[in-house]
Image (tube, rainbow, N blue to C red; front, side, top):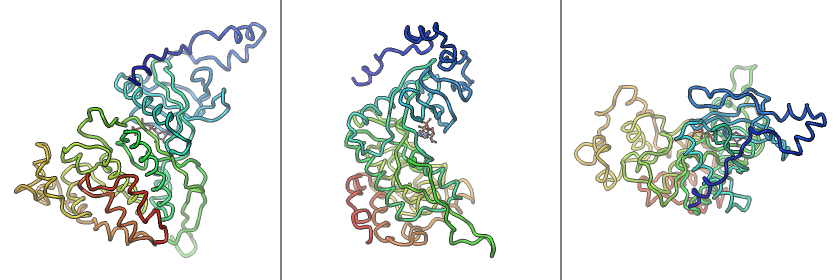
Length: 393
Ligand SMILES: Nc1ncnc2c1ncn2[C@@H]1O[C@H](COP(=O)(O)OP(=O)(O)OP(=O)(O)O)[C@@H](O)[C@H]1O
């Protein structure tokens, strides 16, 4: 219903001549204004359907393109100057391909639902506007800083201190609790989709020394404020769900086993993300289902029999004699066996990396990484966990 209403919104005609008032200004000698507000010449999209632009050009008379901030499957995100509100914004310019345009309209629906219910504290990126320009859906957001993944990468994958992970975890859970209350499932939670609000950071000498006269530095964000982005894969609880969702490393076992999925799949992803922020490395660094399940068993113990028994036809082949994982027999290479063997139990993984609050963090992670989605912590239960409630525990 909401989606219908969205689509009925009239298409805005950005390439038409200026309005009468602006036209009059032009006639009175506003050549500079005309040039400043003019649309660039029409060009073909590139072969992937991306909008072709030059920096400094206009995207509608309102937005001036300043830089490219990111790129994803759906399109490119451009930093723009909003002449109307006089602020910097991030505009996602979606590829002009039907499936991406359709997905973008679902993202707009989700963003409208999130905005309508937001009391200003949801930790989801603020949505400003959307429009259709030269066959590209454009979605305007507040401008944010780098993603947690970008930050980790630039910091040579140096882990975040546990107190910062706690602040990130709390905000992430709050935004997901808010989405779940609205019956929305994000389905693509990962460090790339969590952005720091501010790009500012401080540089501190790290405990590691490169050589006696050379000190290594690590960076820490000045502020712990984060926001969640990318609602392009968000699912409505009451709609049909596609069988596979989530980026591989953050995908829950019920998805791999073909058991169907709902809200708890987001909590599994959060468990994986928190481990990654504490260790600097993706917990399940894999591209293949059997290896992924073997890694899970190495870190978290055996999969429960009742889940394995219900595995769908596609996943049955990963098991022998009913419930035992076909591992290492089914491994595709020695490297794969080695990669699994290298992993530690969750307890050891965290104890080796985290300086304090270790036991409450491990307990929280065990709750988020419960195999059985019906036993997994909900976002609200996780927020009530001692790791957040009682930071000194
Ligand atoms: N509000 C914002 N402020 C600053 N940068 C942003 C903002 N939104 C997105 N970005 C940047 O653009 C990148 C792509 O954005 P987004 O994830 O929304 O696109 P996508 O095409 O849906 O990606 P995916 O392929 O993950 O689905 C992000 O990783 C981030 O670097």
